[in-house]
Image (cartoon, rainbow, N blue to C red; front, side, top):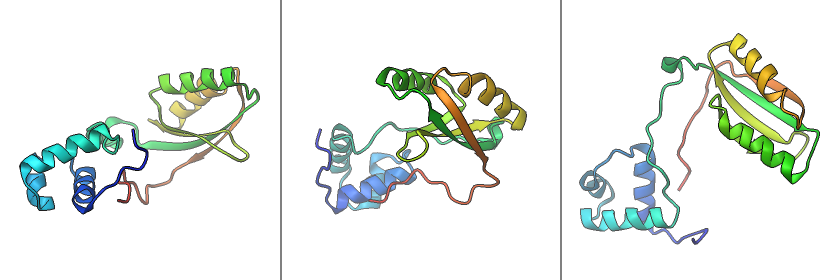
Length: 156
C-alpha cells in the first residue's frame, strides 16, 4: 500500500465529499465532483484499495445515547516493556468507554478520550479499570465542559 498515493483534484473532491456525507450515491457523488458515475465508482474503489478511504460509518450523538460526559485522561505507565504496553493496549481496545487512545511522546504515555454517563460513572471506570491495571502508575483527568469543535474530516 502506497503511504502517500497521488490524488488528483477529482480524487480530492471525492474524499472531501465522502468525509461530509458517506451516504451519497455514486450518481450524486459524480454530480458533486463533476465526473461520470462509472468513473467515480472506479475511483472510490481505488481510494479504498490504497487505504485513503476506510470504513463507512454513521456518527452517533453521545448525549442521546447517554454518554454526554467527555473526559481526557492522561496515563503514565510504570512499566515500559513491549509486553506491558501490548497488555495495556489490549485492555484499552476492550473498553467501550474509551473512544480514542493515543500513544504519546513527552511526560505522559497515553492520552485517552473517554465517554461516560456522569462523574460517578467515570469514577468507577477510572478506579476499577485504568488505575487497577498493573502497568499503570497514575493518571490525570480533565473533564470537557463543552465541545467547541469536532470533526472527522481530514484536510485534503
